[in-house]
Length: 244
Image (cartoon, rainbow, N blue to C red; front, side):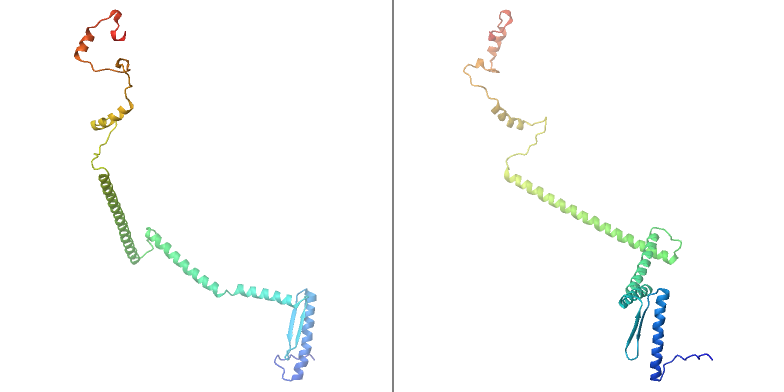
C-alpha cells in the first residue's frame, strides 16, 4: 500500500514538527549537494529554524562571493525592469518638449505659407491675425530704430556745430587782425606776392663791391641820355666798348 499524500500545513505537534524539520532539512541539504555535483552549478542554501539556528550549504569556496553575485544579478535585473522616478520624469519632460517643438515647426511652416490646406477657416483667421500683429510689431521696432538714428545724427550735428563755434572764437582771439586768405597753386594774390618778396630778398642779396661794373648781374639804372649815347656808339670788329 502506497504512502498517502501529506497535507501542507503547519504541524501543530511540537515534537512532530521538530522531527519533520530535521528530516527534510537533511534531505534538502543532500539535494543541494547532489545538484551542485551533477550539474556543476553554484548552489547556496541558507535555513533558519524557528529557534533561530542557522543551517547553510555553499558549493563554492565562500558564501559571501555567492551572495555578492546574487545581489549583482538581482539588482541589475530589477533596475532594468522597473524604471526609476527620475527616468520617468525625464521621459515625461522629453515628451512635452517634443510636442512643443512639433507645434513650433508646424506654426513656422504655416507662417511661411506652407501646409495651409490642412487648416480650417478658424485657424486661418487666427494665423492672419497673428501675421498682422507681427507686422505691426516689426514696423514699430523699425520706426523706433529710425528715430534713434535720427536723434544720434542730430546730436552729432550739434556737437560739430559747437566745435566749429569754439574754433572760430579761438581763431578770433588769437589773431583778430590777420585776414584769412587762401593761396591756390598757380593763382597767388598780390598780397601773398608782396609778403613773399621780402623773404626772397633775404636769400638773394648783392655782393659788396667797390666797383659796380664788376658785379655779376649788375644793371644800374640808365637814363635816356645814356641809352641814346650807347645806341650811337660803334666799334671796330663789331665789339661793344663796354666789354673791351
